[in-house]
Amino acid sequence: MARKFAYYPGCVAEFSSKELNSTTKALAPLLDIDLQEMPAATCCGAGDVAEAKPNLYLTLNVRILSQAEEMGCDIMTICNVCTLNLRRANKLVREDPRLLEAVNEELVKAGARPYEGTREVTHLLWYIATEEGLSLLERQGPKGLSGLRVAPYYGCQLLRPSSVMGFEDPDQPQSLERLIVALGGEVADYEAKSKCCGFPILLARENTALKESHVALSQARDAGAECMVTPCPLCHLAMDAYQRKAEAVNGETYNMPVLHLPQLIGLALGLDNKIMDFKRHMVPVDQVLSVVGA
Amino acid sequence: MPQTTFDVFRYQPDTSDDAYRQTYELEHGEDLTLLDAILRLQNEQDGTLAVRYSCRSAICGSCTCRADGKTVLACMTQVEDLKDQNGGQPVRVDPIGNFKPIKDLVVDLEPFWSKFRSVKPYLIADDAPPERERIVSKEAMQKIYNESKCILCAACYSECNSLAADSEFVGPAAFAWGFRFAADERDTQRSQRAKLYSGEHGIWDCTRCMYCNERCPKGVDPRDAIEKLGGIAFQEGLGMKDAGARHAKAFLYSLRHGGKLNETLLVPLTQPLKAPFDLPFAVKMISKGKAPSPLPHKIRRLDEVKTIMKNVKETI
Ligand code: SF4
Ligand code: SF4
Ligand code: FES
Image (cartoon, rainbow over the protein chains, first blue to last red):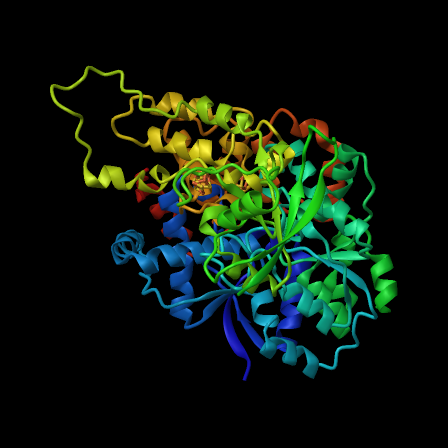
C-alpha cells in the first residue's frame, strides 16, 4: 500500500517553480507515495523569519508539524530550506519539553492544535535514495538516462548542520550519486557540489551571491557535466534563473541545464515532458532531452 | 603498530614561490592526534615543517588546519579516526581556507583578528557603576552561553562561503562575539551594536551555508548568533534599513496577508531603488512564469496565523 505523507512542497515549488510541484505529484504514485495536501500550512519562513523573529518562526513551524500530526502522517518536502526549517523546529521542541509547552500555549491561544512531538520530516531525496527507494524505481523498469553525465548539486541546507539533518555525511554525500547511477546516468564529480548557491542573499547582495554560484557552475562545467540536478528549488532558481547573470558577472559561459530532482527521475521513468514543463527553465534543456531520447 | 602516510601541503616562500605537496611516513601507536603526528614529523624527519600550536588540548585555538579537506583542530583529531573515515588513504593535511598561507600550515590571521576587533568584542557598560559587582542571573547568562565558548580558532572562517566570495565579510566568529555582548544584559550598546553589525559585509551578507555551525569544534553555532543578531536588529527598529532586513520583512508581510510567500513582492520590497532598472531580467522571469501573481496566496485558517503574529513575543 502506498505510504501516506503530509506533502509540504514549499512556496517556491507552488508558485514560481510549479514544474517541480507538478513533476513530484505525477511521480508520487510511481514511487508508492500518497501525497496529502496541507491547505492550512504557512510558509516555513525560509530562514528569513527566523532571522527577524525567532519565536515566531518556531511557532509557525510547530503549527505545520502539528497539522501533519493531526493527519497522522510524516511530512515530505522537496526543498532544502523547508526541510531544515521544519526539522530544526521539530528538534528544538522535542529536546525541550518546556519550550514545546510554551509554543503550544501560543498555538492554543490562536485556536490551533497543540503539537505532541511525534512527527518526522523527510525530503523526497532521502526517501528515494535508500535501498528500498531505489528498488521501487527499479520495479518501474526505468528506460534510463542513456549515460547522461549529471553533476549532483546538493547545496547547503539538506546537508548542514548535520546535527539537524543527519541523513548522510555532509562532507561526502552520496545520495544523489547513488540515484544518478541507479537511473543509468554517469556522475560528473566535482568538489563544490555542497557549496552554497547564494540564493539567500541573491536579492540583497547580488554580486556576492553570483560569485558563490559561479564556483559550482564552473566546476560542474569543467567536470564535463551535461546537466546539473538539485533537490532544492531555491538552488534551482539561483543556478538556472540567475545563470545568465552569473555568466555576466563572472565573465564566463556555463550553459548548464539544471534539473529538479524529480525531473531527473521523471526523465528516466519516461514521464510526460508536458508535466515536467521544461519550458519554464531559463537555461534550455533540449540537449539533455535528446541524450535521453525524451 | 599502525603506519600512516601523510600528504602535506608545503609552502616555503624563502626557497620557492610555489606551493607543493610532500609525503611523509610515520609509524605510531593507536592513539595519536594529528597535531602530535605533525610535531613528530617536524622533530624526527623535517625541521622545516611549520605549524602553529600551543595548548595541545583544544583550548588555545591555534592548531586549526584541514584534514582530508575538512577543517579541524589538529590536537582534537585522532589519526586513526581519519583513516577510518577515508578508508585507509594517505591523510591529506592542508592549511585552513580563506586565508593566505605564510608558511606550510601557518596562515596569516590578521584579517581574522581585525574583523574580530571591529565588532568591539568587549563589554561596554557606560551607565554609572553599581556599588558592588554587576550580578547576572543564570537565565541571562544562558542566553549567551554558546557564544561564550568560542576559542577564536577560525575554523568557522575556513569554509565560510560568503567570505570566499567577499573577502570583507566580517564573518561567523566575530559576530558570535558581537552577539555575546549585544545580548549581555550588562552591556549598554545593544542598539549601537545592531547598527554596527548591519552594514555592508555585515550580518545580512551571510549566505547561510551553515559551514560555520558544522565546523565549529566548540558548538558555538555562529550562524545561529548571526540569526539572533538579525532579530536584535529588528527589535532595534532596523527592519527597513538594509536590503537583507527588508527581504526578511517581505516574508513577514506575506505571512500576515496570505500565509505563503509572495515571491513577486520580494524583489521590489528588498531593492526598491534597484528593481525598476532590472526590467529586462524581470520580463524574462515573467515570460517563464517565474513571477507569480502578486496577490496574497491565502491559506486556510489564516486567522490562526494572524493571532500568532500578534501574540508571540520575541525574547532575544
Ligand atoms: S565560533 Fe567556533 S569555529 Fe569559530 S572561532 Fe569560535 S570556536 Fe572556532
Ligand atoms: S552560515 Fe554565514 S557565517 Fe556561517 S559559514 Fe556560511 S556564510 Fe559564513
Ligand atoms: S594546540 Fe591549542 S587548540 Fe590545538
